[in-house]
Image (cartoon, rainbow, N blue to C red):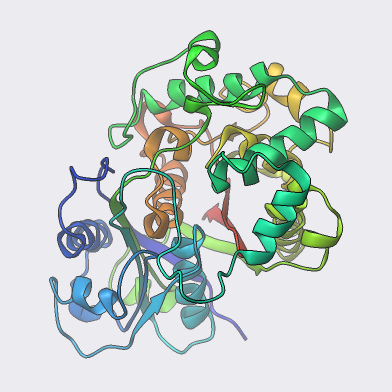
Amino acid sequence: MTQDVHVVGVGMIPFTKPGANLPYPQMAAQALNAALADAGIGYEQVQQAYVGYVYGDSTAGQRALYEVGMTGIPVVNVNNNCSTGSTALFLARQAVASGAADCVLALGFEHMSPGALGAVFDDRPSPFDRFEAITDELVGNEQVPLALRYFGGAGLAHMQQYGTQLSTFAKIRAKASRHASNNPVALFRTVVTEDEVLATPVMWPGVMTRLMACPPTCGAAAAIVCSAGFAQRHGLDRGVRIKAQAMTTDRPVSFEARDMREVVGFSMAREAAQKVYEAAGVGPQDIDVVELHDCFAHNELISYEALGLCPEGGAEKFVVDGDNTYGGKVVTNPSGGLLSKGHPLGATGLAQCTELVQQLRGTADKRQVEGARLALQHNLGLGGACVVTLYERV
């Protein structure tokens, strides 16, 4: 029998551009202390910790935690590319649900460098070699940075199949900026219009402009999860629980379909979402608010379809009709998303968690989605892993 898992504390720091950040132990400690304060507990009550980061040496998780305390607890370092933060949360939830622990920390941080993502170890096979090979075959354009080719290629496939316009991706970016204008921890809070997005430097002619891509960012975020019994014994807020969660990895279709949408995880995301809906006994039509992985505006668009928020091929209409924002069917990325908030890889999933917990508590201020009861989180990492989490207001 599994235990209910409640999210009792969340915290994050404002994300910054590389070079403007504190060292990672200090960023992580600030986010952790914010989550502890939010929960109303001390670090000594945490029984296990899962700490996520991508660009860092082994046991950097311990180095970060030791800023706050050295309590001898198990500390597990997690690296799952862009889904690292939600993978840490997945493991923390499992520990509590199984009864292995009563109070567990998920922490994520990233100290990134300026510019496009690149490999650190160039003397051994890359985990992306198969992804690169199929991308070279399907889209070419080897002068374009690889991440842009992955996700821009997925957007291009949608454009070619359904006639989706470049302006639709610009609409998604403009929507993100409107949402972020109300988020004090978003990196970019300036509202931009669709035309302004289209007027930014072209990264791939006809496919992507600069503002359609999220920036490299530094930051940290944390969540504390516990059992209902632990929360009750310590007088903690049990108002938000994880109703269902699923993690998926690639199947052969990622390469065999010869479709860039599959290369970037469309079926991974769809499978994870379906597992969550089935476990929770709900459907996408029941979701009030979503934080999804908009590393590029193109991925936000295809994720609408993967998560079932609209029919396959219906994403452009979903955007044009305003069904992705306040007053529409489901508010997506009220935080401003990765496009506006930034994307420090290890912290992103836990920043999404922070936003959705605030939404379900009714403490999101000007970003508040009225009456939010069910919140869906989608966090994707190529190579690959996808975590989808459903939170419920109790």
